Length: 204
Image (cartoon, rainbow, N blue to C red; front, side, top):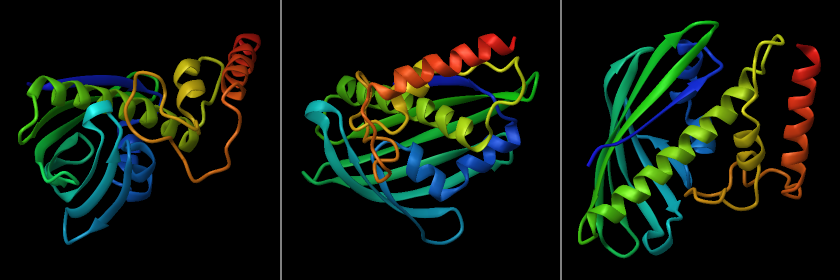
């Protein structure tokens, strides 16, 4: 089953493309990823701790980037082995489209399988990871390209629930974003989000 997701971001197509091709940024925004090591042109070795209930696994494997058309998108194919011995494989297609006012949309299509694992459960985990990734990407865009002008709306829900939390946001998979940075109490982020929203409203 193909898992699909999309998000509108307050950055240009080129700016988002640069984020997606930067290993340090991917380590922050790909749920659970803790290693991304180049193995040649567009080939990588990776490892991740995936948090998904009964499907929580330590995965290690390889990935390659193909069908690359900067800054329109690419296809990443991956394979990996879980700590329980099951083989995982799949692909992620990224597509970026420019929209008005310096924004773009990013669309994902994810296929994943795991040997000996119920496919609906794998699809549910892939959907959660895709949702988590898009939320984290939105935060990374806010950090690298802060809003300019009064017409930009900050997505306060994702900003509050995703940025530097001690635990994965409720209903999402993956490890905490920026888990190696200084932690703040989780109540700080909803308050900060309300302050930012109030500042935006006053500036209108």
